[in-house]
Amino acid sequence: MAYEQKKDTINGVDYTFQKVPPREWVKIRQRCKDKNGQALEEKLYDEILSHIVVTPKITMDDFEEVEDMEAVMEAAITFQCRRAETV
Image (cartoon, rainbow, N blue to C red):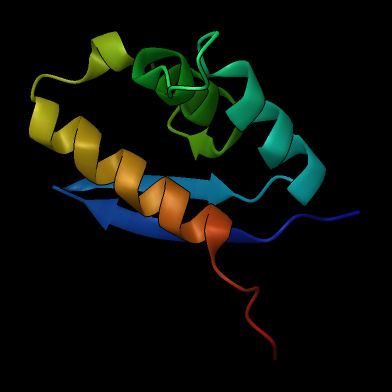
């Protein structure tokens, strides 16, 4: 099964995002919560960079500015959670 991809340029860097299946997205979100159900942002960002951001392959440590990292996370989550485009 081919997963939908999207290319986006954020602050001069070209990114490719790839959707994960709905079940995998739920598993990712569940893995990234503490015992009280609160989101663990660092863990979630690591998962997004590992599973949704296809290129470039980066980690949180590769970002020089928090604002740039936040923009990439917002774009990745928005892409993952929106309805697939139909042709």
